[in-house]
Length: 157
Image 1 (cartoon, helix red, strand yellow):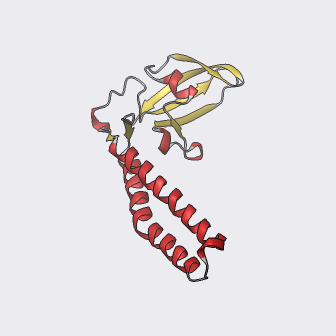
Image 2: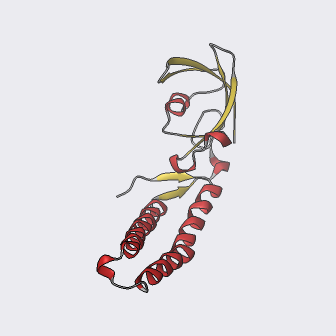
Image 3: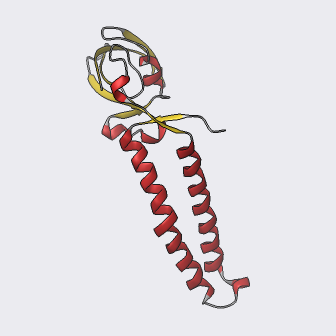
């Protein structure tokens, strides 16, 4: 049984959209590549056919993995979340006590994480250090460069 993962409405929709694409257009493209390679003659010596069949296997395993992820996915009702503590889906404004840098991150599931968009995984070291803390708390977080102290300035949804 796969581990239950919590998603935003946007993240869950993205996963469903990707699965739909893989099942329709993705499968069609691979079937066409296999047919094209098959038309080129002897299958025992046809590297293009072998490559297309291998691509099909990888494609089908990706579909199976996505189906497993969706089967264990749960949508979080953001309206029922406590704003006084850092939880999954919280948008947290933090300040690095050492250098004064302020950052804002949203804590999301691993598959939704995108640092450029300000979304970090709830399983990341920074998120693990912030979970359960309140505004004004100092979180000591172990990162590869050592330990950093982060002050929580604001929590929102």
